[in-house]
Amino acid sequence: MRYLILGGGPAGIAAAKAVRKREKDAAIVIATEESASPYLRPLLPDFISGDTDLSALADPQGEDLGPKEIEYRKGKRARKVYPGGSRVIFEDGTEEGYDFLLVATGGKPILPVPLKKPLGSILPFDSLDDARRIRDRANRPGVSVVYGPGYLAIEACRVLRKAGQDVIWLKPGQPRFGNPIAGEFEASVINEIQNRGVLLKDGTDIASVAEADGETALVCTSSGEEIRCGMVVVATERLPSTQFLEGSGVKVGTGVIVDDYLRTFIGNIYAAGDCAELVDRTSGRSRINFGWRSAIKQGQLAGENMAGGGKLFIRKQEDYLWLLFGTSLLDRSK
Ligand SMILES: Cc1cc2nc3c(=O)[nH]c(=O)nc-3n(C[C@H](O)[C@H](O)[C@H](O)COP(=O)(O)OP(=O)(O)OC[C@H]3O[C@@H](n4cnc5c(N)ncnc54)[C@H](O)[C@@H]3O)c2cc1C
Image 1 (cartoon, rainbow, N blue to C red):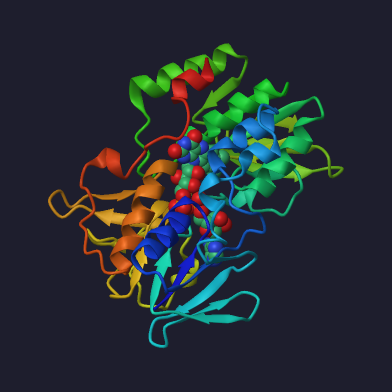
Image 2: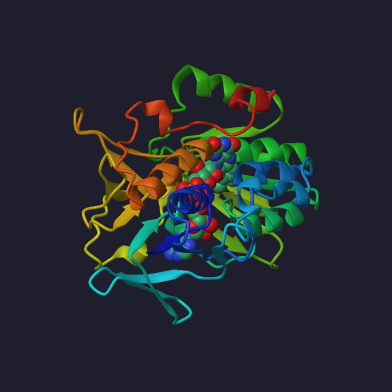
């Protein structure tokens, strides 16, 4: 059998290994758009603050892919999936066939219109490349604007402050995807962040961003305030990365809709991790994952099931959502 896995994050790698455990002679290819070797995304904030260096970012899960004969292809961004012909076309014009396909493409930060401009000072907070750029800019003392409603914005504020930046947090009232931090717990974390000197502007959106000299951005807020800063870090919610599935027949809601086996409506296509949307039949509610460890759990299960495991996904919410990696959020901010 030939297994093609789109996305080289924790879900994709865990799935590949689970397949290998069950099928010794399967051909397994992980194709991912990034140019980096597997790395620990949750440590990116500490990389920005300088608490973690590049070598400590390597994902131990990714270390033995070669010996397990799992091919890890970098720079491969899926453009289109053709379930009829069981093949995927990539942005570089190449194509790849499969018997089973796993979509494990994670999420991407939502970019509101004013932040879609190709300006050097607007920096999404998502990948290792993003973190490198943010770290470089944070080396220059000055003001950083963080834009986002929840967890990633809190993390961005924490580490930019630690790196010596004057941080202004613009916290818009945006929808949150399956992200349960809110209420009292979130309030105490935000309190800690403010105690560290982060200036919070709650309910404030960005109306426009302009750049004068390639170095400094001028942010105009929805309330008419002007802020001059060295960068705008876009730390918004991660919306499942699924555009390449358009027209494929794979059903997509907010994420790729899967059943209790992590299977889509097309029998040999599965989805796992932050891009998957699990619909709970009893409550009718659907959930988008956010969390490193739960992405691994989902990936493992999808891998086993693609290779004939037939296992039901555990229905407990905490088993597929928000199983954090590392220390608790509140401890981080202290
Ligand atoms: C800055 C940051 C900090 C975080 N901190 C924590 C934390 O402390 N604890 C925690 O539990 N979680 C944390 N998370 C969330 C955690 O990283 C995710 O839940 C986890 O990485 C999801 O794993 P995944 O395999 O589903 O997707 P991802 O890790 O997102 O991997 C998906 C991969 O697919 C690639 N891809 C996307 N589209 C395509 C395409 N069309 N073709 C090919 N490849 C594609 C992406 O570039 C990416 O490399 C953090 C996330 C970020 C961004």
